[in-house]
Every structure is written in C-alpha cells, then in structure tokens.
Image 1 (cartoon, rainbow, N blue to C red):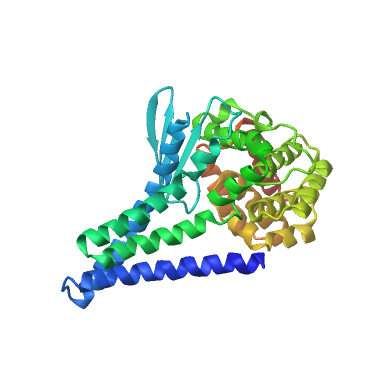
Image 2 (cartoon, rainbow, N blue to C red):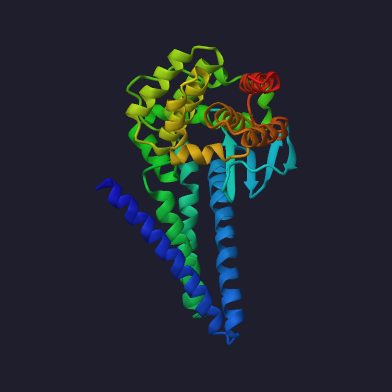
Length: 355
C-alpha cells in the first residue's frame, strides 16, 4: 500500500505539471496570439514560473531559518552558489547538488532545540502561500488560466515535497516528529554540508561522527552512519566497513541510504578485488547515477571499476581525467581528499607499470 501511495503522489504531481503547462498555453491563447506564439509563450511562462518557485521555496527555508536563529551559509541557484564566510559573500560557479534548481544551507549555534522543523517547513509554507495568492489573483483579475498555472505548479511541488518518504522536506519533518532524538544528527549533517562549502580542508570526516544507536531510524541517523563507514574505509578497516554498510543496507528503507550503502560496498568490492560483487553493485540504477556524477571521488571509483572489472582503458582514462580536473575544486573534507588522491595515484601507478 505504501508503494501504491507513493506512485499515486508522483502520478498526481505529473498530472498537475501537465495541467500547468496546458493552462499557461490557454492563457496566452485567450490573449489572441498566434498558435506558434501561444505555445512558445505558454511553455516559457510555465518553465520560468517553475524556476522562480524553486527559488521561492528555498527563500522560504531561509526566511524561516532567519526567524529561528539560523545564519546563512550558502544559497545555490543552478550552477552558481553564494557562500557567506566571516561576513563576506562569495559567488562561485559550483552547484550544491546535481539537478537542484536552488538550495539553502544554514547553521545555528544552539543545536539542542526543535526549531529545525520550522526551518524545514519553510518551503512547504511558501507553496501553500503561493496557492492562496494565485487564487486571490484569479478572483481579482479574472485571469484564471494564469492563476491556474501557478496553482497547479505549487500543488505539484507541494505533493512531491510533503510526502513523508525519501529525502523530501516532508520526510525530514516526519522523521524529527517521530524521533526527536535525531535532531542532533540533523544538525551534524547540516554542519557537514556547511563546512564542505566553507572550509573543507579544515575538517576531517571523523569530526562529523558521533555514536549512533543500533536501533536508530531515519535519514539523519543513517547519514552519520554512512560517515562512520567511510572513515572505516579511510582507516583501512575494510572488513568492519563491509559489515557496517551491509548492516545499514539490510535495515534501511530509505532509497538514498540504500544507494549510498551499495555505492560504498562497490568501493569495498573493488578494494578486495571481488569483481563479481563489484559488477552486482555497479548494475544498481542508483549506483549508476552516482558513478555518472562528475565529482572527484565518484570518478575515481568509476576509473577503478572500468580498469578492474570492465577492462576498458578508454573509459578508465576518461574517468581519471575528470577526477583530476575536479579534485582541486572538490568539496571533499581533508581526510576524504587525502584518501582519494592516494587511491587515484595507486591506479595511475598500476596503469604506468602495465599491471
């Protein structure tokens, strides 16, 4: 039933997106434009509205964060990110996450309260507010098709972001309501995200690890467990890391935690020379998606996979080149960067020696 409910939410979200584009087109048709211009302006209006709503969603997080004592660390728009450090703003051409139109990251000095829930709710409140404003606009102007475009878009985004599964705002809010003790993990994950943007080479991944109870549930607790598993790998505790990630994979129902567990089990299989296991994990759709990311760490893993398992030197060289290009600007913290640079150097040495 849970899966059916999730699929229904996605179907409804897509239906509302389609309705938004249809309403945008009809709105311009009513203004008397030609067929070509109707579709051009209608689709452009819907697309620009989508992007503007993405921005307003994140500004909602920022506003609620400001009200509850958060200080701005980063605000990303497309491929650009604005970071604030020591009172100074810096704009750089680096996206926070792949396929994210906009994203806000803030930090709070007092990490003991539950106000993080209000900050997480900011985006959802923006969608509700925009729906009400669009309805008001429709009544005042009688331009219901323009209003309906924004109503449908915001209903779609509200459905996607409010669903209590995955890595959505709704899922995070539901997790913290069900497990208030996970607040400490949530702040730790936020601090890690912030520091990777502000000063990644001043911290190690182990600085963002605290003990997590074995029966802890939720994406925030699992994120800290993933940090712990990576530190095991960096320290050469491969068997411990394998058991750790396998245990997490067996117990979690979070899609992102499942994908990351399999990604690092692939990493371990490559270290152990277990080509069959490596192929098994690499065939996972989520893992494939991560291996396609043009980030230093994932491309180094891709290079080892192509070299050891696929025996494809062209793809190996391609991955190495991308890894080298992105290593200098990577958001890897100190021990992560040191480890992956060493692992890449080891691969290049093997290739040079013709092993």
